[in-house]
Amino acid sequence: MARVRGRSMAPSLSPGDRLLVRYGAAPRPGDVVVARFPDGTVVVKRATDRRTTRAGAPGWWLLSDDPDAGVDSRHRGPVAAQDVLGVVRARLWPRPRRV
Image (tube, rainbow, N blue to C red):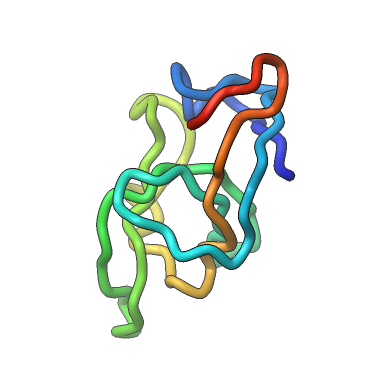
């Protein structure tokens, strides 16, 4: 499980939403994922497409659903594929639904 903090994923997700995450799952473009930025911050973002990191490793371009809120790949660059920790399968609380 994971919990949303902040408004960067609005309107899809809201602060306090609890998410069911399949850790270790391979993301596909359009999936909402849990990832770790290089500074150690764990985030919930949308994986839009595969990219290459500055070091040449496979990675993902991660974006916020609300482009005016939060920090994403527009600020930090691609996230290494190994740092995409899992794929969000559903919102469990407050109202269960697929994401």
